Length: 236
Ligand SMILES: O=C1C[C@@](O)(C(=O)O)C[C@@H](O)[C@@H]1O
View 1: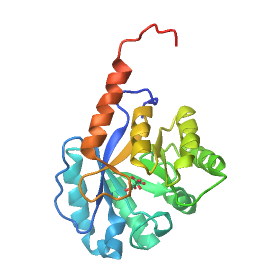
View 2: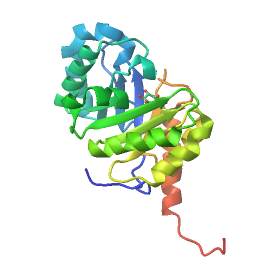
View 3: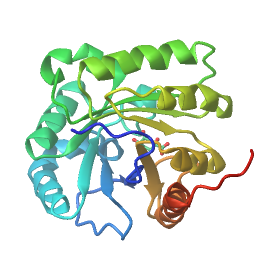
View 4: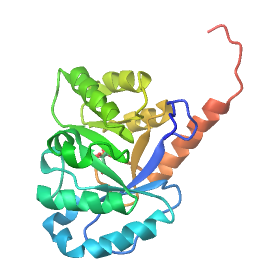
């Protein structure tokens, strides 16, 4: 994948996050550049629907990128999904050409299965105050680079984590960095700063604070306008 910087006008990729409660046809609204299928909403029931899931992924892929996520319970997953089933789903998604979202802890545990796929969004979700936030995301980011991940993503509920996240975005190396704060105003700022991904809602969202896809598109357009604005020679 060519290296893009936070200054690329293509960023962020706008991801429409879908809480999948049953496998049925989906028509992503305009503006969705990717659709995230949050399959943990179905829990272990998804096991009986894997062939329909393959068809859904293939159909969606003709229109947008697809991200398959089975979020671990400890990192905000809605229903527990057995690790063996999660691995099966991740494999199925990978073979069908979808991106897969995997938590850092899961990736460390199952490195032998997913070591260097290149289509992994390596993710971290922070729900408690962590004074060691910089250490955590720096070490995660090393792993993301060693795996040649598609993106490293960090989501946090702590408003005061934003400066640490922005620092990582600015220091980005080969692997693009996605920063996902919780508060809507910080999400808007993250779009303007060129986060690699931003998750947006199309109805029922999957996280508090998500902006609607229409708001995400509007802010991304403002970012493009700002990047393309003629340079002025103001003294400050
Ligand atoms: O990790 C993320 C980010 C997210 O939690 C958010 O805050 O928008 C939404 C999730 O669906 C996605 O997997």
